[in-house]
Structures are given as C-alpha cells and as structure tokens.
Length: 180
Image (cartoon, rainbow, N blue to C red):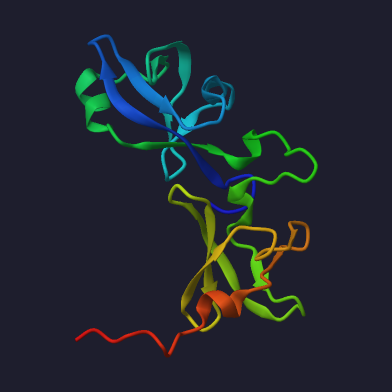
C-alpha cells in the first residue's frame, strides 16, 4: 500500500478464538487499549480487513471481540499471532512537538549541512530506548539513538531528519581486540 492514507500501523494482535460462537481474542498494542476499537476495521499486513468489531469486552490482558466477520473457531485459531493494522490516517493529528514514530519511516536522513546520508528504514525499541535504523546511501545500515543530541531536527513537511552524530555510530574502531 502506498501513500500516507494507505500506510498501515500495527495496533493489535489476534490471540485466537474465544469459545465456539465466532468470538476472537485480541490484544491491543495502543497506549489506551480501548482506543483500538475506535479506529475502524482492523486489517492484515496486506490491507485486507480481518476484523470489524461489533462488540468487545475486556478480559485480563486482552479483549474478547464479537466481529462482523463470520469465522469458525478453527479459522480464528489459525490466525493466532496475526498482527492487526489500521490505516495511518485513522490516527488523530499529533499534538504540537509530538510525532508518530511511524511517520519517521521513509524520511530522508541528512547531516547538519543538508547532505543526504540515506533514509529511515525503521524505528526499533528493544526496551531501553528508541533506535532509528538508517539505510545508508552506501548500502550499509546504521542504528542511531533517537535522542535530541543525535537527531536534533525532524521536518515532516520537508521529509527530512537530521542526524548530527552519524560518524560516532558508524566509525569502525581499530583498537578492537581480535578474537584468538
């Protein structure tokens, strides 16, 4: 899918069937879990509508959803682990000074002087903080901490992200001990 209106954002995951009446268990990945159901139909990675919630109720760590789609228990169980998406344009506009991480993907990465370095390939978080994965023009990849010091400027309208410290994160060290 292309275009900002067609860009998909992961918001939940199917956990499998609930009972035998066609209900499905869904875990929300949104900051406010209940907001998952105000975003329209939930789609697969290909954009196909998988779940259109009619009703939902909270369980301990997930929601039990009665969908409009008529699937048997086995079909929902086969979809266990399937990520659910909504179109990016279903999200409200961010507050001033805020951004959606998904909006960074695809931005052109430049140095402080405006020279092109590559593009943002992904934004990762492995627990400590966000990292920006850059696909460099050379074909290599670089991981940059998503901090004000490392990424001082983001211009969504211009489609650019300034990285001030690329050399720090891509420099090869000659003093690394070699393995015996």
